[in-house]
Length: 312
Image (cartoon, rainbow, N blue to C red):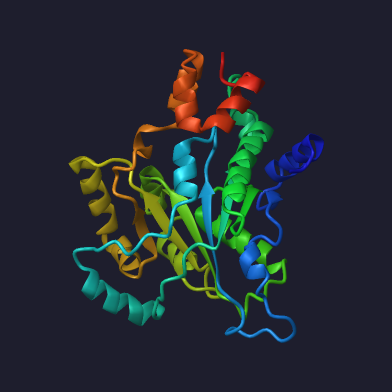
């Protein structure tokens, strides 16, 4: 973890520079996991000798991080979600965008905080950006200690759209000399249902540009970002299932579901649906510390109490 002054400088630089990205902490050789790094061949590198990389990316406000964040961030890559028209849409999408092969399981993780203008929206009781990054690093370190063969990092980005974030992260990976032309690298963004809805809403794109931008996001690298979208189910009742089915079976969405580019995580029965940063903050105000620890984990709860966060 960088020093506090260095962290503050990095946050200020990223928050004031549109299109910027930086890692503030990571395991050695990220995004290549330690077990893969030891096996990397020396000398000539070919596509057959370089193992693929698949990075899961949880982009959130982490105000504060919860066990729900942890559950989603360190989840496994889910299987295809079946649509009512999957067979026909698979045929048409394969012909227009080429065949899509499923990526391997996640080999690296990225906890991502959007520092774009965050200082202007902070409430007096909110954790500062540096405090949120420190809590994210606690999650990262906890995961690294329990899973030493996994690559985990904490990053900052200044970009409002997922299409833009995928492009920026790709550009950063290119600077690491990972032999992207010879190695398959996939990016998967982990989101909630509300974000899934916004992702396929034309209002959040330039006029008449939604389909073009989404195709850029999902198309294989180097034609596109080679990205996937995984949405965590937020509940188990019929209303939640109906909303998910309605979104995923829309005409402009179904082709990406059939290719496995859009997937659902979990069953809605995992218990994380009842946990939120808002509920944590409410429990802190009422000094229900057992609830706080249950929803954040022991280390995050300890940090919150030591820093006196969210108490007013």
